[in-house]
Amino acid sequence: MEAFVIEGGHQLSGTIKPQGAKNEALQVICATLLTSDPVTIKNIPDILDVNNLIKLIQEIGVKVTRINKNDYVFQADEVNLDYLDSDAFVNKCSSLRGSVLMIGPLLGRFGRSTIAKPGGDKIGRRRLDTHFLGFKALGAKFRHDATRDVYHIETANKLKGCYMLLDEASVTGTANIIMAAVMAEGTTTVYNAACEPYIQQLCHLLNAMGANISGIASNLLTIVGVKSLHKAKHTVLPDMIEVGSFIGMAAMVGNGVRIKDVAVRHLGIIPDTFRRLGIKIKIEGNDLLIPRQPHYQIDSFIDGTIMTLSDAPWPGLTPDLLSVLLVVATQACGCVLFHQKMFESRLFFVDKLIDMRAQIILCDPHRAVVIGHDRQFRLRAGRMTSPDIRAGIALLIAALSAEGTSRIENIAQIDRGYEDIEARLNALGAHIKRVDD
Ligand SMILES: CC(=O)N[C@H]1[C@@H](OP(=O)(O)OP(=O)(O)OC[C@H]2O[C@@H](n3ccc(=O)[nH]c3=O)[C@H](O)[C@@H]2O)O[C@H](CO)[C@@H](O)[C@@H]1O
Ligand SMILES: C=C(OP(=O)(O)O)C(=O)O
Image 1 (spheres, rainbow, N blue to C red):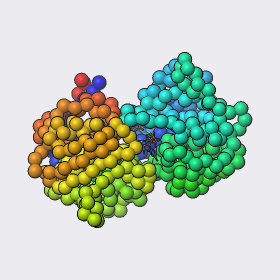
Image 2: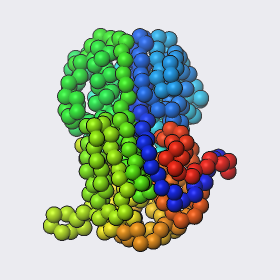
Image 3: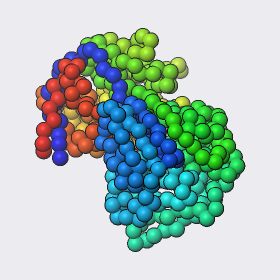
Image 4: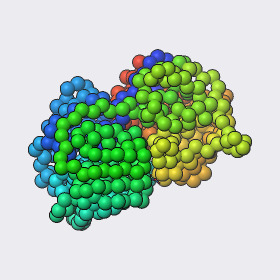
């Protein structure tokens, strides 16, 4: 197991470019299972989660050609469905949340799939009800295999389009239902659909492959089933969570950082949320410029009450940035309540920040109050373990600003979602070393 050793207190300056979006890449790679034609996908991030998914779909028979570091061609013309019955498949799924995204396309194209418990961050309950309910509404049947603890899902006839109102706007659930429905008989209408840029991009790729999806970017999608899909080309958007992580990092330890080619119009409410913490962000074309911020003052609500930042389905604030926002608030002037509504174990990492001298009250598993001390004292270096991907990057930001040398263990969590992170941050002036535990 590797760890990061971080010498804190070095200011970061210069230009950094975000990688392609992890959560979009996982969806569009799985969408290539829907056709036997080659599909080209550009700007795929070179990160653990995505590389593991690519290996997994290779094992099921998809031909994968890497044209460049971040560009690939996928061709699913000889899919081996027997692989779904192997123990290797179940084991690999358990280390990767994105594996769940193979179910929809396999069911949509071949009429059968297997659901093994997917991995991903241990950040609370991560139920799959929306996926199951959606597949059932399309006519699929489930069978539980107790010995292997997997569900077999199949349909004797073609899936049939229908109206469905999702129980919640699940991101991977919506993606799976869309991929199952694109070649179903008739029309599927999905209300309360998730509409993150990841989903929008998936729909654009599917339409480029010949699907007929309308309502993209809204929570009401209409999918008119087509007979088959064909080849297409697609480019993954910059990773908005990485962009947000860099905004937070630049605010806390930056001395002028340009975040390049961020696709500003797809960032939604993210820049304004950092602005509510008092952070100055300048937009120049498609770049964000984060100047040095000697002080930043947290807003209050218009009626003068203490501000709350909480997550919500898109276009609300993504839960994946709350940990970074929380760390940034520790150096601000003022108070803010963080309310993590979606996940129940994502705030426990604040204990580590408290050890580093941050002033935080963890009210309950979902809520924490941060009392920003306006940079009156530095955080103290610490030894910590990264519990999940976003807590990991938040702790890395804290360590960069702290006095002394910190150590973060279990950095595979960070590698899951951030490409070559130490090299890219060291190029801005950070002092991060990767060491073996
Ligand atoms: C691989 C991938 O794409 N992972 C993302 C995806 O996970 P994933 O698709 O697994 O997450 P879901 O959107 O299904 O739901 C996340 C959690 O939020 C809860 N929930 C969801 C919708 C809602 O309206 N109300 C509600 O409370 C769910 O019960 C669940 O506990 O979306 C999450 C929510 O943006 C992100 O944190 C993950 O990074
Ligand atoms: C929670 C996340 O990832 P996953 O869904 O893959 O666990 C995330 O990207 O913040």
